[in-house]
Image (cartoon, rainbow, N blue to C red; front, side, top):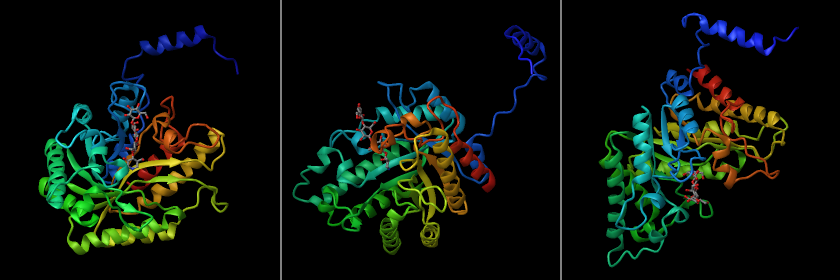
Length: 379
Ligand code: G3I
C-alpha cells in the first residue's frame, strides 16, 4: 500500500472540511458509563476532590479530569471533603469551603452528589480534638449533642442535592470482631448507641434520603470474617429498628495473588453470593460506592495487567449486576495517577497501580470497556 503524503492527507482533510456538516458528522461518541447504567435504573459516578492548591489531582480544579467526570458520570462523591477531619477543625466550627466548592461545581454541571460520610467511626479518621475530647460531667449527653449537631448541620446544608448518604463508614473492629470503640462510644456506653443515633438523626433530618452503612468487606477469601461481622451488624440494625436502607459495598477489589483456575485473583463467588443474598434478604439495598482494582499480583507489563484487571472487573460487575437491588455505582477515581492506591497500596515493582477506568493520558482502558459491557448486558 502506498502511504499518502502529508500534503495529500491535508488536501483530503480540506476537502472533508468543505463538505456540509450533515455529511461529515463525526462518528457517534460511545454511550457514557452513566447512560449505560441508567438503562438499568442506576447512576454511574466517581469520587472527586477539591484542590485549589494543586490542579494536578483528581479534582474539580483539573480541567481535563473535571471534563472526563462530566462526560462519563451522573453523580460524584467527595473523596475527602465531607469527612470530620476536613469539616470539623474544632468542636465549635464547620468549614464548608471545599465541600461547597464540589457541590457548586456539581450543580453547575448537572451532576448529583452522594454524601460520604457523616461518621467514619474510627479513631484514626476522627479529628484529633474528638479523640481527646473532654465530654464533661454528662458524657452521653455531650456526645449526643456533638454527633446530632454535626449530622443535622451537614444534611441541612446539602439536603437539596444529596439524596444518598454514607451515614456510617467502616465501624467494625477486626481484632474484636465487634463494632469499634471510639471516644463517642465510650461516652455513650456502646458503639451501637452511636451508630443507631447517627442513623436515627439522619432519618429525622433527611427523611426522603437513602441511608447507607458503607464498608470494605469484599469477595476475596481474606474478607470472609469481615463479611460475617457485617452481617451481624446489619442484623443488629434490623433487630433494633435502626433506619438503614442499604449496604454500601466499597468494592476496592484486589489481586494479591493469582488463582491458576482463572488467571485472576481468587474470589469466593458462591460465598459472596450467599453474603449478598443474606443482605438483600434482610431488606437492604446495595450500592457499589468506591470501585477500583488492586493489581499487586500482576506482572509489570501494562497490556497484560490491563487485560487481567478488565477480566476481574467484568467478573465482578456481572455478578453484582445480577442483583436488582443494586443501585448507584461509583468508581473511587477515574484516572490511575490520582488514585489513593498509588500512595496507600503501591506495587512492589514501583510502577503505577492500574486501578481506574482511564490511564494517565485520559485514554479509556480495557477496564472501562469491561464496565460498559457489563452495564450494557445488564441494562
Ligand atoms: O490534604 C493533605 C495535603 O495538604 C498534603 O499535601 C498531603 C500530603 O500527604 O496530605 C493531604 O491529605 C491526605 C488526603 O488523603 C488527600 O490526599 C491525607 O493525608 C490522607 O490521609 C487522605 O487519604 C484519604 C483516606 O480516605 C483517608 O481520609 C484518601 O485520599 C481517600 O481516598 C480515602 O478514601 C477512603 C474512603 O473515604 C473510605 N473507604 C476507603 C477509602 C480508601 O482508603
